[in-house]
Image 1 (tube, rainbow, N blue to C red):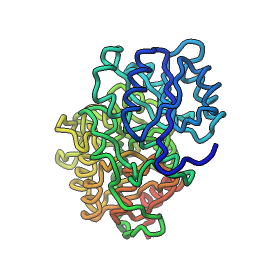
Image 2: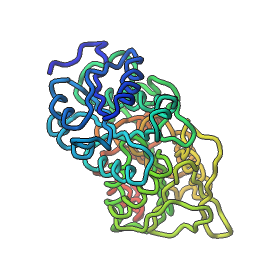
Image 3: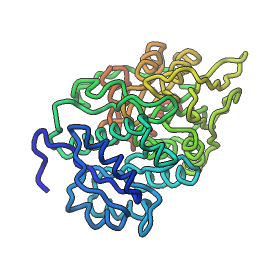
Image 4: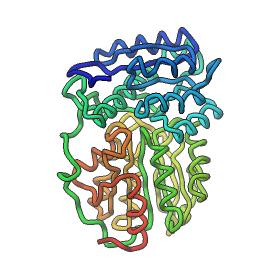
Length: 386
């Protein structure tokens, strides 16, 4: 298909067996002047047959459908259009959370938690905002990968405001940083002190990147790992289970009062900020329901800030793919305190929002592809800072 012309809207396919929900989603997306719903489908089979001819850049794909469900359709859609961005839409059940995470491991770019009922879908402003934000960010990311024109001169690294406790979120639609290449990024020296803690932040595209990163560091991991991934509660429970299987290390949702143990991974539960506090010589987890930051709870910021406070020069933090700029303030505190920050590069990120924000702030010691961050973190943990 020909490259989109300047100002050509993002092209989206909506796949859902409910005509009511298809209508809501299509109408909301069409209300954005830079999005065009090019086609809809009532099941995966129809979607697979029409996705290539539709020219869709993003597919919003329901999980539970007759004839062909979303998980079955997913690899077939990718086979038809290999670089298409697919957002899985699912209700907040344990089964659907598990399926959504499996879907992302199979190539889906992200997920959107769907309200339980059609009435709730129609009245949920938060679902609507997150949906539009993710579609825009993913479509823009795909066009940049292909060297194609965006609908406007704005850069989509962020997402619209999100509800407290709901994944996603943005500070404002538009750019948060200048367009910059990896070669132009200012780097700082890492701490000469081997880290005693590792903090990881992620959002859109995070589960795939997180799985790769944790698997790479697992063989030589000797310190506790704290992870904040923008997800609702049911999803973070399943994320801990999936990550534990992927890396082979003890991985749990963090709980109030948990003692941090070397080689253990703690994931922030949906709806709570996760911080570190001292209890004598012991470091413990503290969960709070403090106001969302960057419209997210859990937010990366409180976690990074507590790591900076408690560990200083012995802190190592990593920012993986994600929308928005959550974590940039906390990351600055980590580096100002003498700690070290790594970020995922733009080419390997699903959305270069959060890692782009810290990279362009000039506070990272390295900005690397996802396949190299694990080895760099391992080198630093082993005392190999340059």
